[in-house]
Length: 325
Image 1: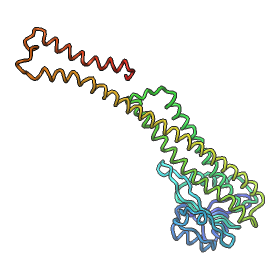
Image 2: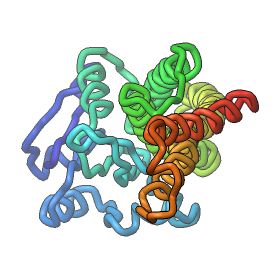
Image 3: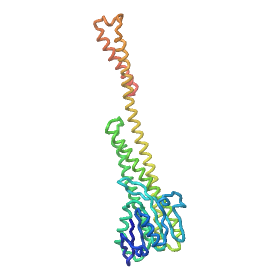
Image 4: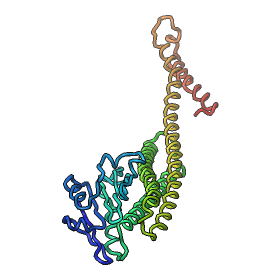
């Protein structure tokens, strides 16, 4: 899908099906899962070469950040909800003095909300660089909100694990709760790793833009970029803290699962040890040899039954005395 935004005085207007003339005058061109025909139209109208999906997916800094004839080509992974499951998707920016071209391959709430906000707020000095910086700020702000939600979720998991009185006895309730906690920790860990990857790229983009576009970058954007760099650094520290908390909760959850498994094995072991002597006694008196005196004894059955009970209680008493049960 190809969308163009043009400045009309202080207002920003969206054009969903732009003509070639509109593309030449657009201050922001947004490509959402663009076809080759749409990419070719943008290249022909703006004389700007657009990167491919493979090029945007490169992980080397030299491939993600390039400049040619004053035109910056920048790429960073974006976090998008695909069918309710957060996934990283490649994203790209082509920034020149005249305009900004964004390339994305999944629907993004950040882009849509930012575009709606920009169309409502008038700005006589809006340029492609202003839109680029504002878009980066919106992405970082959205990711900060996501990290705050993850922190709240991790706090709730910690409360369930450590403060709700888990007895780790292997019951169905405890098993279900620990299984859900483990799955939630894994999902949060995935999202944090996706955000961390995006933040690392954003942290590289900001100083690169400040240095390579210093000749034509509007002066009012430099303080905003410096503030953005500080925000990114603080978020990196915060998601490092969340990573450590996730690792701690993961170790704790696995520890409770191991305790529950050990308790189950302890019960099985006690049952097997307690059951061996009575089975041995019953096996001895079940051999049916004629020379066994207890067969002719009037109290033989009571004696055998009492011996079976006694041999079962003695191991239990020993386990209790040693505080094993």
